[in-house]
Amino acid sequence: MSTPLTLDPDQACTRLDELTVLDVRTPGEYASGHVPGALNVPLDLLQKALPDIRQAAQRGDILVVCASGARSDNACRVLAEHGITTASLAGGTGAWAGEGHELHHLDGTARTLWGMERQVRLAAGALVLTGLGLGLLHPAFELLSAGVAGGLVFSALTNTCGMAAVLAKLPHNRPRTADLDATLAALRTR
Image (tube, rainbow, N blue to C red; front, side, top):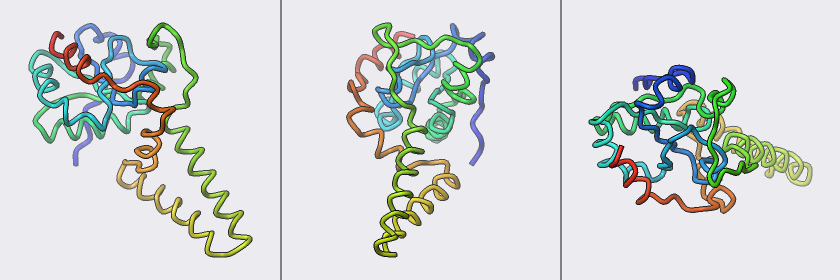
């Protein structure tokens, strides 16, 4: 499996007016701050958007963005499997903001939603500690910690994250639903 083409934040910033930017994070993450002009197509809705993304790719270059670059790399691979060439923002919105570039917020207000990676670290750590603590009562509970450790290793090896997929479905990560129809209409006009 080849590595997707990447643009660093400064490269992307200089080309922002000529790129179609797709943000594949959850609607909650997108609302908390996104690259200016980015359209929200959550990773779990990417397949539904393929025809419109294909048309947009024929009109110009597409940049895929997430929080750190992992989900956007996965999205680029999925799109490449369907003949759509894209680039990923190296380091995601974290690197974008870290380089001093502006993030836009829905309704002009910043939200204090934790990023998905931080939520995964909290959930994984809490589960490991719970397994270890309950293991004092009965050793079988330590299997919870072992299961989380195995999941983290699998996640690293496959560059996927099942825990993030589960956490993305929680209500606080979807304070609004992704308006895919509006996003696709905007994508068609770019």
